[in-house]
Length: 350
Image (tube, rainbow, N blue to C red; front, side, top):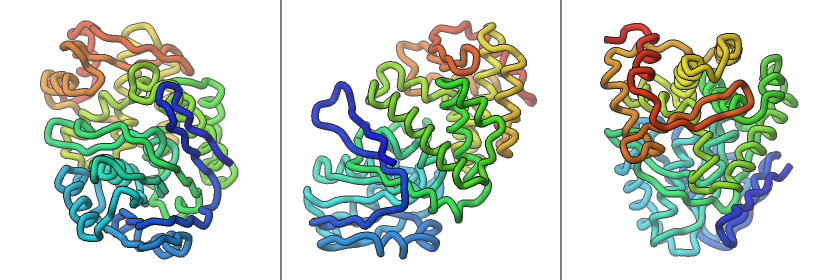
């Protein structure tokens, strides 16, 4: 199956997202695969058997969100120079969202921009991170605050790569799936409530539907000037959770799950979401064994972190909230006292 990306406001940028068994890939250029030791141990041999190129090299970087830094990007760049890549060379991101974000960012920088493709190997990256061209790294101030919108030339999603994914990593991807359903499609949310994610055909259908939703959004709004910001539902809160825990306690999807619960609590406080709907979303996250509890130690400090969010502007925090299930609303300027009241619902707060 092919889902096209056709960016409405950017000339000559189109590419396909292919959801199927990985095809044979032939490149008349120098190719460098960027991966990590975990993915390489399971799948690198398979990938290399599917690639034909003028020259083929592999760059392996450490595994984990803690390595999603400018230093790691510089190390990838140095490897590109060592291998003498030119402007017609190609990078392949082979891994999860961290690998995809850093490989895309590196591609945007090397000699002012070379091509890259995404071959995602985690559920989170297959349904979300690999689609849409967001690239970047974290720093001490927050998540993905350094980066670029830089579209891949193609995305190849092979569900077979998920066979070796640890249960916790698999669950992290479900958080992003739930996010899209709550924001855009009530019937899809209702389908997910009874879906058996261990069923191969069901999983393929879930990936397909999630990619179609993501593509629909990106095609309208490549650079997050409008509707694409809605995909950050749960992330405004979740990024603070990740930052507070130094990107070591929670996987990204786990932090997003906690962020969804916090965003929903704010929506309930504002009368946008019923307590029954709030409970349904929480139950779906917990069905996937995702965390839904978090103890905020300092409400004031947690609140201040919101101002580093990329969606905030002119000192006003923009919150993405559900307006019932299947609809959304972006709100700026919510009273600080209201937000802090909600934050205090999460135990341990000062």
